[in-house]
Amino acid sequence: MQITKAEVIPVELKLRKPVRMAHLPEIAAITAIFVRLETRQGHTAWGCTIAQPDLTGEKPADVLRACREGADLAVDLHPTNLEYSLARLAPIGQASPAALCAFDLALHDLLSLVADMPLYRILGGFRNKIQTSITIPIAPVSDSVAMARDCARLGYRMLKIKGGMDPEEDVRRVKAIHTALPNHILRLDADGGYTMQQALDVARALDKVVEMIEQPTPADDFPGLRQVKEISPAPILADQSVRGPASALELAANHCVDGLSVKLATCGGLHCARQIDTIARAAHLTTMVSCFIEPALLVAAGLSLALSSPNVRYGDLDGNLDLLDDPSIAGFRLEDGWLIATDVPGLGYRVEL
Image 1 (cartoon, rainbow, N blue to C red):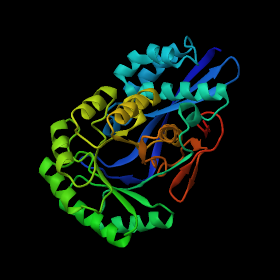
Image 2: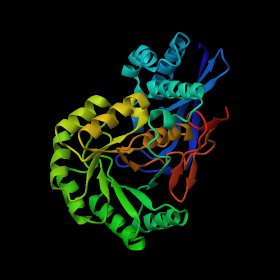
Image 3: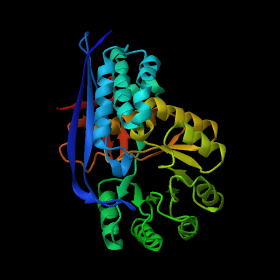
């Protein structure tokens, strides 16, 4: 089998409404980059990534340049020899994990198309559905409760509440949502916005209210994470602290957290994400497969990982829901907050570009 063409297609995608996250500018649009691979045998596979400095730390121009370098290399790769192909692309991944992610996904997609199997089954096939949270962005208390009620009416039973700017306000928002929806599972994501003491105060105030707290302290503050984890009554997960297998191993070895959150665009794709999940599993940490604001194709890849591993306890795969004119259409089903795979070969998607 031979790859005959590799095409890189950048797309600007607007959000239905701007969102706020801790200590970041308001986000109204994202840059997505799609990669299409064609083979002499007639297969067409797709990959995707995002280039959003506020989210991934990578500039669009740098990611696009790295993707084009990857496209030049792709025609010399053996599409079903993943280890060899990804090793050849590794130098690109060192400069741009987001670019590597796009090619990693396209190669995995191509492998499963050739095998005529859904990717989640090739990766392990532990389950065929997982419950996902939906995100409540930073907003005043009354607005947060209204958004939570809207999500509940749509069938969601897990809510991830963004915070990190004002700890006391975050506690009020979470408690107000809990009062309005006492049977819903609530998670708090501080996006690294708290000091260690603030994180402990919030964790104590929300004892038995939240299922877990995600990234309470800054990404590079591993000792702070460990101290919060040792005292917090709620499990602590690392998110921005997890940049790849090396950081995951350091977090696990030093007992800094109770679980690791994996995002494909920051770690370089499924190959590295599976290594992170293996580290978590060996260290008896839970894995959460999460996402950015991102196209459905990237969410579908995250879902394939989440369905493949018994160690994945948390699903946080709602990144495509607020995008306008997403050219990728997911093949999975979303029913009452559950993401359900369909048994079609590949990642499961359509791309209209």
